[in-house]
Amino acid sequence: MRKSSLRLARIAISAALYAVMSLAVYPLSFGAVQIRFAEMLVLLCFFNKDYAYAMILGCFIVNLFSPLGIIDVFFGTLGTAFAVVAIRYAKRMYLAIIPPVVASILVALELYILGEPFFMSLLTVTAGELVSVCIGYALMRIFSRRDAFLRLVGADGRYYKITADIEEKKKRRKARKRGGNSTRNGDNNETDVNDCDGVKDGYDNGDLKF
Image 1 (cartoon, rainbow, N blue to C red):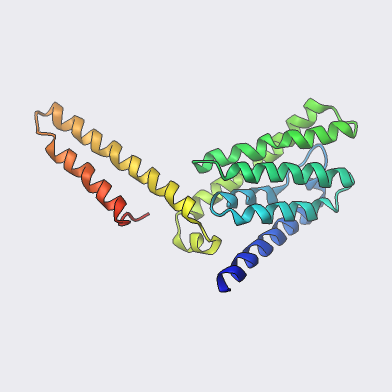
Image 2 (cartoon, helix red, strand yellow):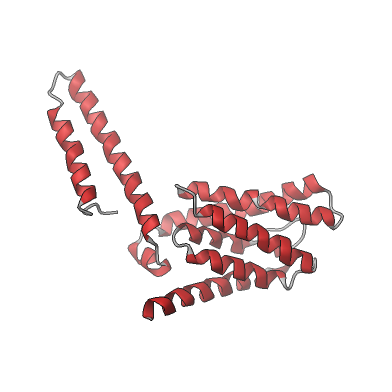
């Protein structure tokens, strides 16, 4: 029961935060030239899938206030839904930047339907989205180094598996480098093979620290 309540609280709070951040800078959140800073929050989906629901809900609420009308509720929310679902397939956080930027095509299409030039709208909306998610990426990279942040956002098993895989690959590269150096120096490579086995054992036993 407590876990379910915590999930609902995270979804509600992050959806509300998205809405507040967007409406606080109302003129910048809509139109052909827009920088919706709340879009940086979509990268939370990389840590936990529950934030996908939060971002879709937050975007839906915000677009109810759009000066563009009900069409913005449809296209804007659809674009956010596409972005947050795609983010869950990203294997690295920097790749999670791509889906929200690509989703800007839907906003540009919406503006085109409303009479704005498509390619100009695509350029301006994509640029604004890129600014927002890049700021989010920089912040998330910094915060994700802290266990307190990961606990706060409820980072799930998928995130930790990705992190462990990255750490494992780094250790293997280091082991191969040491192996190459030992070969050039005429040393036996047995030590380096043992190092690799140690990395694998640490991974299997869950002893790796991040």
